[in-house]
Image 1 (cartoon, helix red, strand yellow):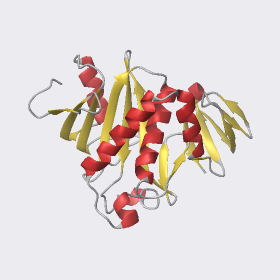
Image 2 (cartoon, one colour; image 1 turned 90 degrees about the vertical axis):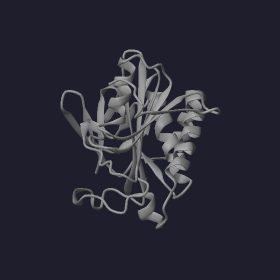
Image 3 (tube, one colour; image 1 turned 180 degrees about the horizontal axis):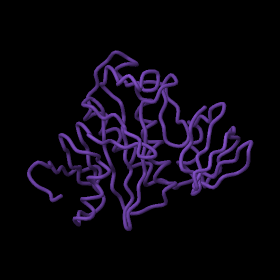
Length: 239
């Protein structure tokens, strides 16, 4: 994919990144990855009004119809822990400006027990891509997401300006990515929720049912069934 007139490039004076806005794409993370392969320099941000193949954990489909905020930050390669914590904390800060929310470890934002946003971190050889999806103005979801997903509009009855929310997200991401890891980790832990129980999916197709007791600064998880390294955890399924 090469840049052409269908991509609008904006220079943000208060945040030194280029931003590319798309009407529709398969996945903003995939677009960012292709841009990197084509030689686009980091940092840059890709946003889309809709995604045909939005991605969540384990390549699960993220329903990405018009009304949500779908974006990917491409930055110089950093430790995936800082990328995940920065993304989750920034999204939590944005959502909490409108409704009370918590972070469900490691990367889901929850409002009233329902998922309103998520973060997906992917790495290339020289860059880190932080993909973010926030449900904003949707009024309904497919049947399979009933009792699972919500949006800002569904929670408050209001309609929101996506550009304003994106501007807030850019500001929080700038602050998080430029702050020492220990600082943002402490803030992340203040906002996190472990849940009463979970199933930890590990590499090698292993699954462990347990309760999380503690998460250390390296995002290693200490549970009632043992300790698990961040690198070994594929994803965590809430009970």
